[in-house]
Amino acid sequence: MLQKLYNFLFFTITALLTHQWLVLNGHIVGPDLISLLPAYNDINRSTEPGRPISLFLGYTGFGIMVLIIPYLFRKRLAFMRSWGSLNGWLNFHIFCGSIGPIFIIYHTNFKVGGLVAISFWSMILSAGSGFVGKFFYTKITQGRSALLKSAEKIDDILLKHYTNKEKADEFHEIKLNFFSMIGVPADSQDRLESSVIKAVFSTVFGDLKFYLLSRRSKRRLPPNLYKAFKDLAFLERKIYFLNANKKIMGHWHTFHKPFAIFMFLVAFIHIAVALLFQVKH
View 1 (cartoon, rainbow, N blue to C red):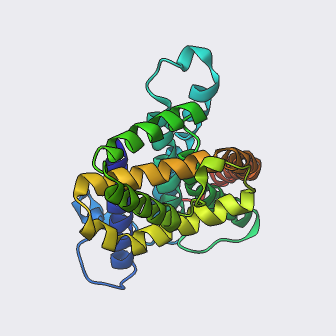
View 2: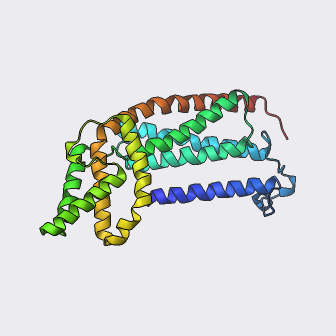
View 3: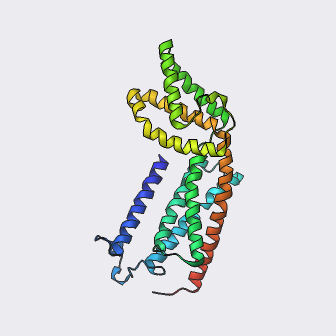
């Protein structure tokens, strides 16, 4: 539920910023929010870097980006472990790490250069890798034993609907069909060690393949059985690629952290220089 709220806020704020930028730059005709402010006629409406609007967007974006840091303390400090669920903190971390860059993009007015450009692209890479990290993090949030228990429970529920031999064959066929769609090897019980490349390919393309090809199964099966087969297939894939996904997260941390650290370092320098040599408009 909270994730849906964050998604709604992200798309709403992005759409609003885009609309206002287009209005202020004369690309479309429409109301601008500055007209709602007192003494709005005295406000410079330019979106060029260094102007009031650009500065407001920059400070707001940076302030939002700073809010991603508490999640790092929540993960590591013992006294913070009772402060809400880690998944809730992660969702807030991702929201701030995704909406903050939107403000920064409009702060630059799509013009970056020099040292700031390095910080900007570090931010883009850090934010982009954050989405990738969230995708694979969801694959390892449960341990192998918990995943196995969940899969066995769903398997038992499904078997109650396919009791005789004819239905048992149908059950096996549907199950293999779901496994095939999302990239689980036919004999998933083997649970062999899988390579990182195979895990990435099977997970990403398996998701795409499933959402493109699952409509027929959705029409053929009652909603409760369709959901059960779907959940079982995704659980089996998590189990099969669990070790590989853990390796992926290790590689991801190696990639994600340096860009995030460098982004903040250069951003602090950029803000300090801007404040020291501030030009009033």
